Amino acid sequence: MSDDLFALGEQIRTEVLGPDYVAASTANTDAFSEPMRAFAIKNLWGDIWARPGLDRRARSIVNLAILSSTNRAGELKIHIRAALNNGLTRDEIGEIFLQVALYSGIPAGSEATRIAKQTFAEIDASTR
Image 1 (tube, helix red, strand yellow):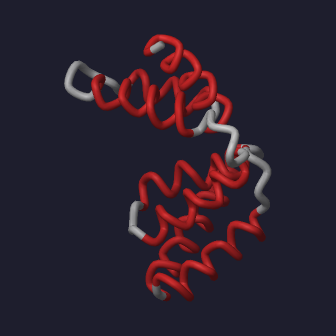
Image 2 (tube, rainbow, N blue to C red):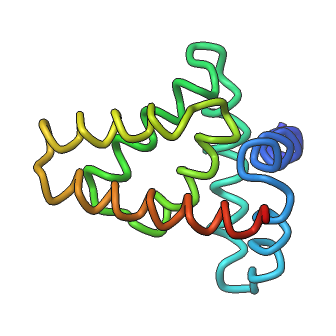
């Protein structure tokens, strides 16, 4: 079962985050960080992201709200890209951050908006 969860997790992770991100993440893994990577792939990606209760688009919305509300800038940047891969538009992402600003505070919403703007610029620059 554990190997099945890992394989499924890697598949979902690659589909959501993209093969380039997954390859870079794997290349940056060492003996110290491997247990955390394996734990996340099995449990987060292989179990939770595979559950039928929410589709990937809905999971992305939840992630953007949580990560921006808890000031997790590095993960937020990753999941902004994932949200776009999962079908959210830039406008919808902006609306999520307005909601965050209302419920979690303007600094959280403003920082998330700044990170999204930077991420969008990086994506646009790489597609030229």
